[in-house]
Amino acid sequence: MKKVNILFTLLCLFVSVNLFAQDDGDKIAGIWMNGEGTAKIQIYKTSSGKYNGRIVWLKEPKDPDTGNPKVDTKNPDASKRTKPILGIVNMVGFDYKGSKKWENGTIYDPKNGNTYNCSIEMKDDNTLNVRGSIPVVNIGRTDKWTRQVKKS
Image 1 (tube, rainbow, N blue to C red):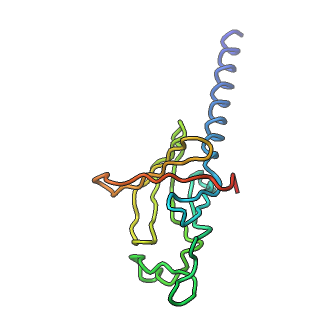
Image 2: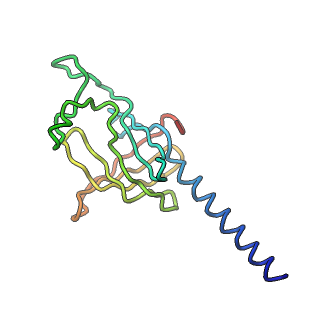
Image 3: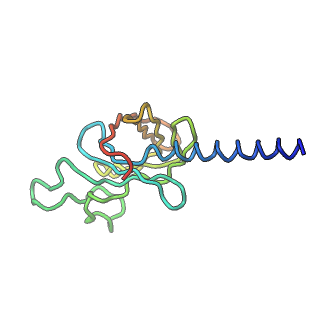
């Protein structure tokens, strides 16, 4: 009987630790302003349990020459160059690794058409360090994002 109680206690502990870890991963969900103040990105959890992000606001949403919505002219895929930047899913595939860190994702920059490896670290509830780096050589930069809206 004592062994059953110990096993049950360990099982409950394991389940509760995993539930708290999942909740911590969801802390990233919400709308974040990039470091330049030029875009807001909504980070959300996908049905597969990964985290993605989409551009939901642009400081300058229209092309100054045409007055039309800005489109993804730098995209390496020519078929996507007429797609509006607003609404683009530009962050894909982040796994929550614990300790307020999300890894194994990529981030797309519509300013230059490049996709970078990306990791995210939450410094506090309202600050993210988003690090994009060139695959293989791991050279990159870190941008500080600030929370605009929690879970949305």
